[in-house]
Image (cartoon, rainbow, N blue to C red; front, side, top):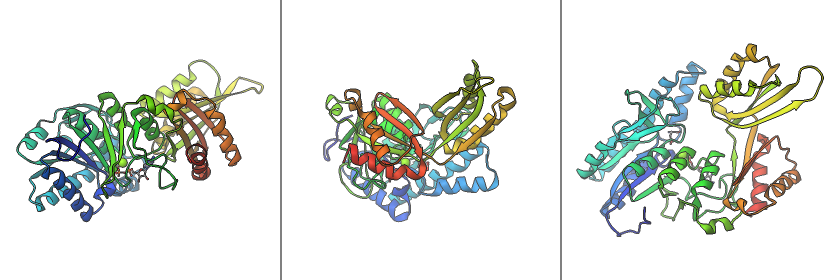
Length: 414
Ligand code: ADP
Ligand code: ASP
Ligand code: MG
C-alpha cells in the first residue's frame, strides 16, 4: 500500500467511521460529505461504519435487564442491529448528495467467521457483492463488527470490531489505502482524555500499536492490529472532525528503536480472580485454565504464590480477565470447587493495568527500575507485574490508575 496524495491516481480506499463519527444525523451527513470529496477525486470507496455511539452499550444493557448471562447467539443477533441502522442511514445520506451508494451487512459483504458468538474470528472474506457494487459505480457501505458463519448464523467480532472489519476488507480487496476515522486525530502517547500532555505520534509500529491496544488504548481494537500486521495492511488513524494528518501504523523501522517508550496505557476493563489455598500438585493449573479457556474467557496475567504454612502445601492463584467475562470465569471456577478443593474464590473489579510500551526497550536497560521508582514516589502499590520484550505492565488499584498514568507519562515522555 502506497501513501496517497490527492489527485494521485484512482485508488480503492477503505474508510472506517467509529461510533462518535456517526453519533447523530449531522455526523452521518458529515461522513457522507467526506466520502463525496474522495469520490470526486475519482476514488472507489468502501465505507465501514460502527453503530451510533452508545447504541451497542444500550442494547447490552437491555439484554442484561432480562438476564445476567444472556445467550451469546442472541446477543449477536441483537448487537448486529446497531450497525445495520448506520449503514442504511449512511447510504441515505449519500443518496441525498446524489451519490450512488448501497449498504451491505457483514454477511452480504462475504465476511465468514467461526461460530464463537460475541468474539468470532474471521475465517475468510469473499467480497463478491462488494466488487460488483463498486464496479457499478456505487460507494459500498459495510456494517462493521459483524459476520456470518458458513451455516448462516450472525456473529459479532468482539467490542470495537468494526476496526477489524475495515482492516480485513482492506486486505481482501487489496485496497490502496485504509483510513480509520475516529474522534481523536491519531494515536497519542497516552489517552489524551486522561493525559492532556500526550503527544500525537506520526507513526507507530504494528507491535507497539498491538501492545497499546491490548493493554487498554481502545483507539484500535487489538485483534484488528494483529490482522493488519499479519497481512501487511498499512493504515492511518485520523479524525473525522478535521483534516489533520493522522498516525500511520506500519512495520517497524530501525529508527523507531531510538525512542524507548512509545506510549503509556491504562486498562480499566480488567478484573482479578484469586483462588485461595489451591492444593499444590501437578495438573491443577492445567485443569483450571483449560476450563476457563473452554468457556472462551481470555486470561491475561497469572500469578501464583506458594504459602509456606504447615499442612498440605497450597498456593494462592490469581489471574486477570476482561471485566465482562468475570461472571463467566467465576461460574467456571465454582464448578471446579469440589474437584480441585480450593478454599475460596475472590473477585476484584477494582484493579487497573498500567503499561509502558516501546520497541526501544529491546535495546535500553533500566526501564523497569525507573517505572517502579516512579510508582513508589507516587505512592502506588504494585499488585502484579508482567513483561515482554517491548512492554512492562503492572496491576494497581483502579482508584490510583489515572494519577499513576500521568506520573509515568511525565517521567518517561514529558
Ligand atoms: P471509535 O468509536 O471511533 O471506534 P473509540 O472510542 O473506540 O473510537 O476510540 C477512540 C478513543 O480512544 C479516543 O476518544 C481516546 O479517548 C481513546 N484512546 C485511548 N488511548 C488512546 C491513545 N493512545 N491515542 C488516542 N486515543 C486513545
Ligand atoms: N459497535 C461495536 C462496539 O461498540 C463495534 C464498534 O464500534 O467497532 O463495540
Ligand atoms: Mg473503537
